[in-house]
Length: 160
Image (cartoon, rainbow, N blue to C red; front, side, top):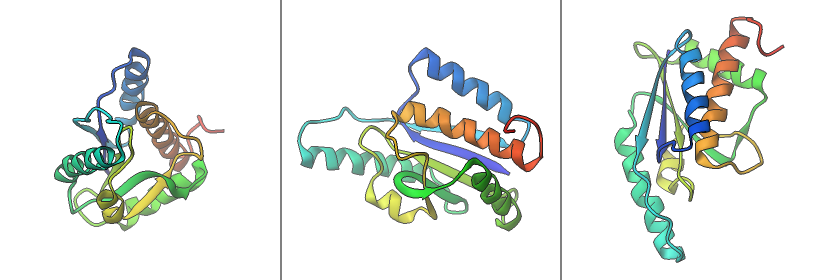
């Protein structure tokens, strides 16, 4: 299975960089992982300008997404899974997706979230929590949960 994380913005804080690198290293055992970053725009103050930023960032994301993969948009209003449910869903995707190998793209928006176009084209919306996280931290949380899911699927110690 191939997994890509397609995200607006770059991880800049040293702590987040270290955590991301650690989980990327751990996940290499289970999947081919690619992190794709697109440029973010400064956040303007006006509502109209904010919507324009979301649209521009969404277009950048869209250009980096493959139509042949399962697209999962991280969204506060998305489905909420336990770690075990995420693992079961991931296992189901490994069995069900066609393609060589099957691919899932997780999409993370910038400060303002994802554009409606990205949310509409996603096959699924996933919520990491009812809390709101900075997009850099959301990336680390997603990586940790993916690592945990693969460990659960293989019945390896870590989760329990």
